[in-house]
Amino acid sequence: LAAACPDVKVFGPSKAAAELEASKAFTKDFLQEHDIPTAKYRNFTSADDAIAYVKSLDPSDRQVVKASGLAAGKGVLLPTTQEETLAAVNEIMSDRAFGAAGDTCVV
Image (spheres, rainbow, N blue to C red):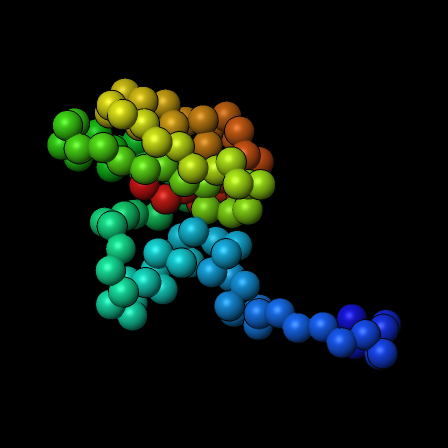
């Protein structure tokens, strides 16, 4: 931008800081790495692995399922049962409801 519009003064986050918004998986890993409190989570690039993980959890525990990438504010699902959680994983990863934003899924 500076080369194309040298007289325009702009500011914004660094590329690394912008990644906090662009990738929920990156953000969760960052929080954990820096001992910043966050809910338990796992990142998945395989729907089968995500489904196996959900099935290993206590069925009475509620989960949040997120498309990791930018999904226009629509990539977070709040299932209330294990069956809904499995459906949410499939919606994000197999059905690709959020496109490439769901290539990585956070549970």
